[in-house]
Image (tube, rainbow, N blue to C red; front, side):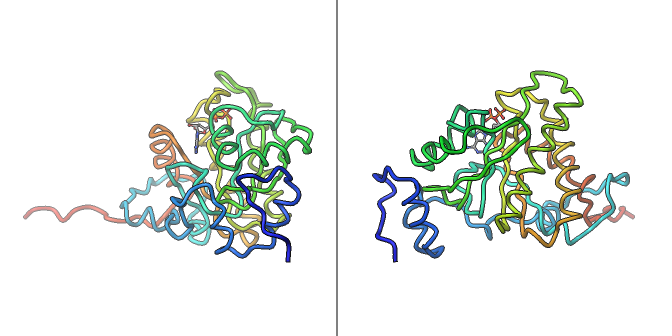
Length: 254
Ligand code: ADP
């Protein structure tokens, strides 16, 4: 068995990574940066959420209803650094050496070993993705992807790049047999991609990927941070991931 490594003081990312790889889930928890982490079972699936929130189903939908896919997708509002999943996706910049926004939060929570491993990844092009260990994060791995810098109306090339961020992250997840993945709203912060257009593209991309790869993952979590994004996704999800219409008309008064 590998010698115990203290993740708060270690400076050797390779040793720390191989130590963490040898731990079971319970033991890994001793090394999280927070005790206040969020277990997967605390995050409802979209099917459960739609049922409890009595979501109104629009008549016009982009895709037909598929309850199996509704079990594989979640909308969660909160801090992605606290979610206990196989991988969180990082909206990184091309250096992969950390930055502001969600990138800064992920690096602070994971600890300095993350930056050390990222140095060895030699940067990343827009739309591509690279993987590292999660270190002190409750997520086992971080998939770093670089979104397009839009600052306003996105071009067709930028739309393709944002979609590729999601597709290439999912490809890496599947190749590494990672079955639960949380995504932030890539490019919609400092990189200025319009929130509404991003959400349409993300839901389209995730639905299409799930249709072709549903057996490869258990859960894809759209992790929103801002109320604005929460509202946008709640409004759009029923069009892309239709659910059973519930509630119906209230009984009319006699
Ligand atoms: P980008 O440079 O790709 O635009 P940002 O980090 O600026 O990335 O913003 C991407 C999204 O991440 C924004 O919606 C922002 O509100 C959100 N965000 C910031 N911090 C966190 C966090 N800790 N957890 C989840 N999402 C976050």
